[in-house]
Amino acid sequence: MRVVGLMSGTSMDGIDAALIETDGDEVFWLGPAVTRPYDAATRALLVAAMADARGVNARTDRPGVLGAAEIRITDLHAEAVRALLEPLRLTLSDIDLVGFHGQTVIHRPDARLTVQIGAGERLAKSLGVPVMADFRAADVAAGGEGAPLVPVFHQALARRLALPRPVAVLNVGGVANVTVLDGAVPPIACDTGPGNALIDDFLFARTKVPYDADGRAAARGTVDEAWVGEVLAHPFFSRPAPKSLDRNDFRAFVTGRGGLDGLSLEDGAATLTALTAASVATFAAHLARPPASWIVAGGGARNPTLLAMLTARLGADVRTADAVGWSADALEAHAFGYLAARALKGLPLTFPTTTGVAAPMTGGVLFRPK
Image (cartoon, rainbow, N blue to C red; front, side, top):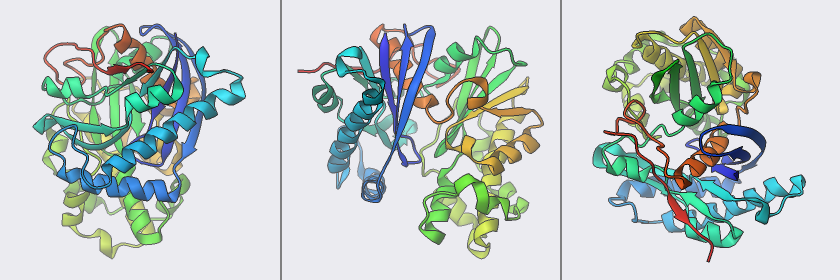
C-alpha cells in the first residue's frame, strides 16, 4: 500500500509530508519527504488557536479562531501532499491512503480530552483520496494517554537494526517522547518532558526568532544546574510510564520557578536545552535496563548542542535517525502513513505499555472522498 503520512507537530513550525510503502505490519520503503514551513501569519494563527483551545470542553468545540485555523491547516496539508508528489511524477491516483494527524491544540487525557484540528472530510474531498485521521481520540476515550502513538512504527523499523539493545527512539519536537525496544518485551513508551517548546518560546520572547538554530545560543551559554534540578522536582518526572504531556504543561511551572528572567539569552537557552536532556536521562534512570543505543529524531536531531548534552547525560551511544537510514525530519510523517495503514486494517495502534490503555486497540477515523 502506498501511503502519504502527514505531520504538524507541537513545535508548530510546518508540515512534513512523507511517502511510505507498508502493509501496516512491515515497512517496505521509506520514501521521499517534503517540509512546508508555516509562514508567520499561519504560525500566529496557530498560537492564537492554542490560546483559544483552553476553552474547549468537547472534541467538537471550535471557539475563537480554532475553526479558521482548522480550515487553514487542512488546505495547507493538501498543498503539502501535492508538493510531495509533483517532483516524483506521481499523481493523486497513485496514492492509496493519506494519514492526517492534524495539529494538536489541547491534550488532557486526565479529562479524556484530546483535540487535533484538521478536517479529514475536507482533505479527502480536496485530494480525492481516502484519509485516515483522528488517531488519538479512541485511546483517550478508553482511558489511555493517547500518546505516544508511534512506538509500534519504531518497533517495525528497529527489527532491521544491528545496534546494542535496548534501543531507544527519542523524538524531540515541542514535547519529547521515547520508545524503548528490548527484544520480545513489549515496547515501553511515554513523553519524557519538554522538548523544543520551552526553548522556542524563550527565544521568541527574547528575539522574535522562533527557535535556536543549530543550538548556537545554547552552545555559548552556561547551564544553571540548580534551576534544572528544581524543575525536575515536578511530580511528572517521578511518575512511571506511560504518561503524556500537553505542549504548554510546563510553561506555568517553569515561569513560577523564576530565574530565567535574570539569565542572559545564551544562559537561558543553555539551561532549557539542559532541561530537555536531563528529563530524558531522568526517564532512563527509572528503567530496569537503560538503553545502550539512542536514536534521535525530530527538530532536536538538528541541534548539536542538545545531542552533546544527551550524550553526556545518558552515557550511551546517541545518533540521529539519519545515521541509521531513517529520516530525522520526516520520521513522524512516515509514522502516520504507517499508522493509517494499520488503522485501515483494524490493527492495534496503542498498547498498555505505550499509552496505558487497558488492552491493545486500533483507532482513527476514515474519510472517503465524496
